[in-house]
Image (cartoon, rainbow, N blue to C red):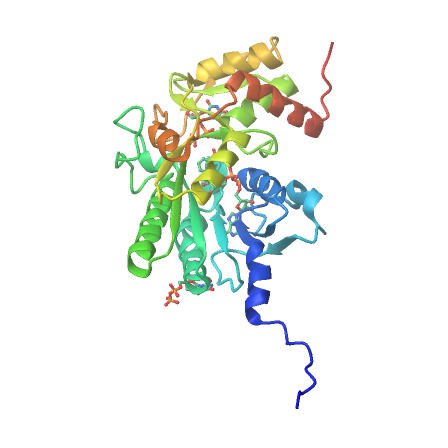
Length: 336
Ligand code: NAD
Ligand code: UDP
Ligand code: UDP
């Protein structure tokens, strides 16, 4: 005798398959400059659900305006120094102020964010089996004695200086990542990001490219900090986001340098901004801050070989894109 069968309940497997085809991605610091561009790129893929966690210290909801209310997007006001209990497949851990004036404003908080914040995200990764990517920094090389800087260079960092909350904080964060990897088998990725610029940087965030562009648009002198011969290498944000995603999706733990090897002195940068944006503006030499690295340029051989990545946007092409965004936000129209 045949029992009348009701249709089988959906198996947990079928559910998990359904959910697995969607990748749930946490972006800490996703309301910030790099984070919000990363969110834009991740949201382009219809299989991704994106959760942003941010305490809005330097970031803003405005940067995520277009995703608020989107069914695949969620924004949580939360401080990463506190425990976070959610379920995710991948974690891009960016939360940390990146501009010297902000990370020096409350240095104890900065080091807590780097150390306790990273520990919490690793604890979360361990509990749910997620892969986690840390955005470390070229600051781990300190005032480098090797130039350009390969990943194998251990750096020259002052442990008790005013920048230490940031650079030593990131160094400990890297250590924690590798300890969780070795001790608990967590899948980790570490990017060492070099100076990055582009639309959505805070206008008054104090970093050199945003300062010069805002000054040029306001008709104020461009403040080159002494001696002006110090160098940096500037990467446009779309290239950076591309590198971060390749690193996350690739097989290598890193650390991997991500940056644009085009190297400029601060005087050269000021002259370029002046030429492109406002030739009438003056260039003024001002006092520098302590422990300013004298030179910085990434060796990106590893990123090229392992990720097939190199930056595409040259400084002269990226600056006008940032100028456009700053004009809109400052309400300064282009003459001609
Ligand atoms: P940003 O200041 O624009 O973004 C950082 C975000 O983290 C902000 O939205 C901020 O509100 C949030 N945040 C800070 N502390 C937090 C906390 N305790 N809890 C939750 N959220 C917190 O900076 P960015 O330039 O977008 O930098 C992003 C990451 O990239 C940082 O980890 C930074 O160290 C790293 N990085 C950036 C650069 C660069 O040139 N922009 C260079 C090297 C490394
Ligand atoms: N943690 C978290 N979310 C989680 C799991 C852990 O925020 O889903 C935090 C937890 O509060 C702890 C840290 O991550 O402070 C490290 O967690 P782990 O389990 O590695 O260490 P333990 O809790 O044993 O100290
Ligand atoms: N700088 C400058 N004028 C400014 C701000 C910064 O000349 O208005 C210089 C600063 O001395 C440093 C470089 O620009 O040598 C990069 O500084 P930034 O704060 O942008 O980033 P850092 O690489 O130091 O984190």
